[in-house]
Image: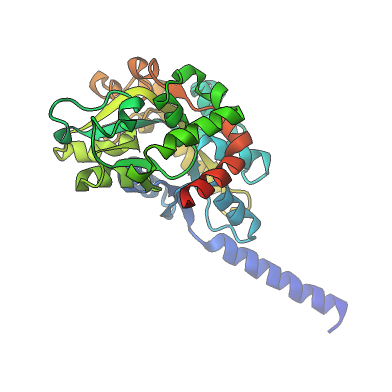
Length: 346
């Protein structure tokens, strides 16, 4: 085969493969459970109906390692993904995510400051809170993370997210560290040792969870009496009559963001989906289905007061909460994951 023919054949193969890659449907990846059910009603189904663009869903439990594997593996199977703050920061620094065209979204100033970054558009404001089943505590339930650790006065198993993030902060609060000082203490070796020592005290009482849908299920089944949980995940069981209550003091709030993975064959469609989900009128509908705060400033003006008061972004809830320290977790997530996994396996 001569060089000209060989080149032509290779070019044909390249075009065919590229066409096959771009032929797959746009995918969106979120956290599953009642939250993704809400997103489907407010965003995903209306997007398909209004644009005619096919959209397939997937869910995940987070982790920068998963994003690295998706992008560095060479065949990116995800397009638009909802990520947590440190995944956004690390992913952007490592080139795993494509830059955001903020002009196409109407400008950065239309969004909360914490919802704006070079590679991500804020999706929600959410909190990890302490929640309990009030039916288990007729004389009154826990009021703090110190009570969460008090298995004598508040008996029953505890649910906690399997990993160092949030778990170590809550352990320090339970040990008497003021919420505003948690990350200062956790930044020291002594602080990390202190958090793990506190966890040792209730290790046998902990049932670990990984997916956001699990904590409400653990409460509903009676496997745990109280648990850490993403606040919005309690909406569905409470509407079904479960007396699950939130303890806002000591909760940790954060902003999740929409990103597009580098190597996605559906970048233009992904941008359209993110723009659709970032529209103020569209975002204002989300709290009707799940109690997460919105990121488009104009959307907040359209949310009824009764819904606003149950959101992490409500002033009375923010006052007693702690913002997650993204820089801390970006710098320490790998080493603390290793230590946590080693400790949990013992």
